[in-house]
Length: 315
Image (tube, rainbow, N blue to C red; front, side):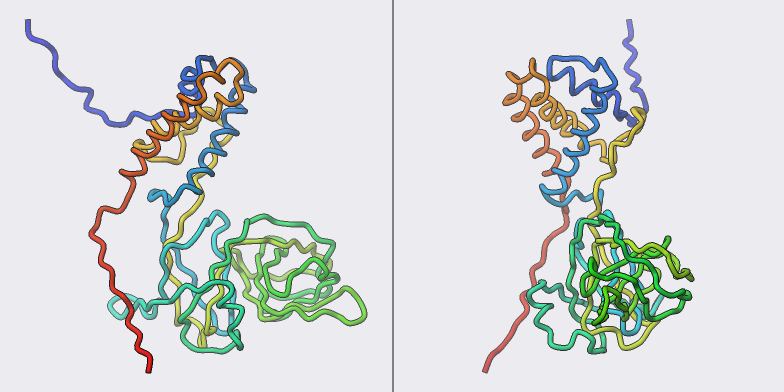
């Protein structure tokens, strides 16, 4: 009798949240029984993906982005879910005339010692300020109506604002690099503005509009661009892994090769919360570390590395 050796012809196996959680509970010697079990598992899953961001670079979360640089503007907002920038260049021109020029990343301590941060020229240095992305409410309101092209903003109260940063008016995010405080009240004026940050639109805002402080990840360039519509900052960023979401039918924002590591990691995290699984915690942790290492070893650049030292001579 001939055996049927036909294969499935598909390579699309994946686990939605429900099945992923069920597998993790089974490894703990338990079962997914209640809505709370699913909710606590999703919470552990979100903490697990944050842990992965701390472990190193996840190649599937590397994305390219661009920011047009404006004349005289120092600070530029990055997407909120940005963890860090991996590489960056300053681009001039387009098409066959496009040129990418290296821009050197510097530390906060180096940036703060630059004597004139408003000096203009071709940007050659960049400081990356890795903020939380959180938004904080304030008691400040817009003192006077502004247009989409206004270059200063008067606020009723600036006590919660730093000397440079970002605010949100209605749906627009605005950067400022200069804060002038009133000597007689808590009011103040913001200047050196970058309108329409983070792909928001510069718009008119009426007096009395509420002001919030947004701690978005951002970059500061030096020298400040001496002309507009000429330079573009091009970067590769590491973004956060997307949340587990509220639907059990969602799939996770990971490649298939990380599924074993995610199931093993979730099982280990759940074992610390399920009393009857505490005896399995060490075994599940060892299995998780092994599965993650296997996935991380595969999820790496496989191109040859060339190191070119920069020579400097002193005399």
